[in-house]
Every structure is written in structure tokens, then in C-alpha cells.
Image: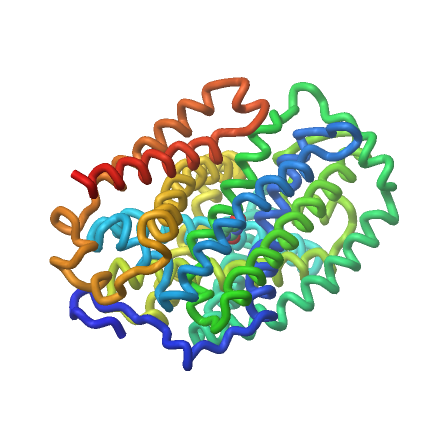
Length: 456
Ligand SMILES: O=c1cc[nH]c(=O)[nH]1
């Protein structure tokens, strides 16, 4: 425990770190191979094809190769210091200023937990419909099945975090093997009905076409959403390779494979029904339309558990930084319950796709600048070393002015304004997207500005 009462935090000593290579691979594969990614694959299927290759696949490979390089970097920071991402954010943003990235992390991870839970609950509602004849969501009386689904998923989430990081570790170890087996079965079923060439030849209707840069931004937002949880897990690892390589490989494979599954299943429905509707990209609806039944529903529930175990642990770590008095295990419990309540929002809001798109924009806008600042501060301005005592010491070097580094805050604001502005330019939307450009600009401004201020 790095002590200074109010701002004390736990740095995991090397002797207590027990996450091996497979754990890290499974954690990040399981995190990314999830319902949300599947849904995104279906949505960005609208980007069409480029030279016979799906633009969604190209976008997912490019964006995840770039974005997950930051997961490795943040992973390295966690391994070196034994501290969580939000604790590390005290160095660039200030001990009090770290409240900003912590609140963003907390809302982000609770939001993702809600997204994955909602999709899984929709699947359970389909099962209840076929088993007990309960109405589906969208039909009169359809709230009952989905609410029961949300409660069941939340109980499963509580079980998966019951022993804190230890039970998350067990869930990932077992869950990922099951996910891989079921997904293989599912892919076989999809390609029994529709051939690969039928999918590859499918022309997305002009009115539904998604520009390439938007597809890139969508994957970037999803991938960067994991980056801010990186150190929360690698602080339990004992080698550089486990902390950097395993998350990178696992995350890319999980993300790209589930984008491909979402893409293929959504396009299969479009090929067989003649109607392309990204609103119906959610795995439950698609699986049901393709007659995948029980297998798909099991995959959806399992992937929701493996992804949400990671979401809840990262959300819990953020809450822990905000209110250090609450233990990590209590924080996990609170985050699970709050996420369950948040899952009810799409029931009121009406369109799940609209709520999800707005949420992705929120995450893309804030995460790019925060991650750029975190990484530049550690590797560029601090030579890859933080003073752990000072991270918990008011009056120390991470206290800045009143506990806040206002320059880092201004850089977040620059990044957000830039992201919004770039999104207004059709050329950016059609090509590189706004996320990575705003990250590069923020990184340069923060690096140069900080150097100049240190000299002055
Ligand atoms: O893509 C993401 C990022 C964070 N959490 C998720 O569930 N999905």
C-alpha cells in the first residue's frame, strides 16, 4: 500500500502477481470477443467492400493494430508500477485532476457493461419466448422477458466478481475456451446456409453506406475503451512480455474475429432476406433470424460474462481511485449494481442502436486525448518511471496547482473540440476518421507544452 492516508493506493508487489501469459491472452481475447463487438461488426458491415475485401475487416484490422499498441503501452505501465490505470493518471492530470479520467472510465465501463448485458438479455428473452411463449421485446408485454434476462445476467456478473480479481481470472480461463468452441460451431452453421462468395458479393444499398473513416472511428472507440483498463490487469503480471505481448495478441484476435462474425451474420441475413438493416445487427436478432438458436444464445451469454468481468473490474478500479475508502471488492459490487440499473435505459429510450452510437461517440471523443496524454507523459516526459510515493502525496510533484494539472485538462478539451470539428469534414469521415488525428495533435501539444512549461 502506497500510504498517504487520503490518497493511499495499492501497488501490487511482484511476489503477489499471479497472472500468467494465458490469463492475459484469455482476458483480452475474452474482453473483445463479445456481444458489443459482434454488434459493431454488423453495423460497420455498411462500409461495404473495397477491392473484394470487406472495408469493415480492413477498418477493424487497422484500428485495432494501432489502438491496441496503446493497450500494450498502458499494460507496461501497470506492470512497472503495480498500479491501476486511474491511479497512474494522477501523474499527468494531478492527484485531484485524476477524478476526470476516473469518472470517464467509470461511466465508460458501466456503459459497456450495460450494452453487453442488454444484448445478452435480448438473447435470453428469445429463449424465454421459445420455451415459455413469453412476448419478445418490442411486442406488447415484451418488457417482462427482457427484464428477467437483465436480472439473470446481473446475477451471473455478481458471481463472476464475487472473489474479486481471482474469480475474474477463473471466468476468463474457462470462458474463453467455451467461447472459441461455440463460435466455431456457429460459423459452421452460418456458412451452411449462405456461401462466402454470396456474402462477399453483397452490395450494401447506397442509402445505408457508412464512410470508411466512420467505420475506423467506431472500432477505435471500442478498442480504446479497453486501453484505459490495461494497467488494471497487468499490475498482476510479473514479466514485461506477459504485460505487453499477450494483451496485444489477444485483443486484436478477439476484436477482429468478432467483427468478422458480426459482419458475416448480418450480411447473411441481408442476403437471405434481401433487406439490409443495421438496426438488426444485434447478435440475438441476427442469430434468431438465421435459426442459430440455442448455440448462439449460449455464446452471447458467455461472451457477455467474459467481457463484463473485465468491464466491472476496470470500472471498480476507477471507483476505487475516486473513493479510496471503498475496497476494490465493494467497488466491484457497486459497479455491477449501477450497471444493471443503466441497462434499463434502452428500454425507455426506444432505439438501442441510437443509444449505442451516441455512447460510442462519447467514448471516442474523450478516450483518444486521455490515452495520448497518459502515454506521452509516462514514456516521453517521465522516462518510463513514476515516483509512486508522490502519486499519493499532496504537495508532491503530481500535485500541480491545487491537485490539478490544468494544462492536461486543456489538452483534453482541445482533443474533444478537434474530434467534433474533424467529424464535420466529409473528407475525414471518408478516409482516416477523427480519433487518431486528434490523438496525434493532443500528444504533440501536450509534449511540447509540458517541455516548455518545465523550462520556464
Ligand atoms: O469495446 C469495448 C470496450 C470496453 N468494454 C466493452 O465491453 N467493449
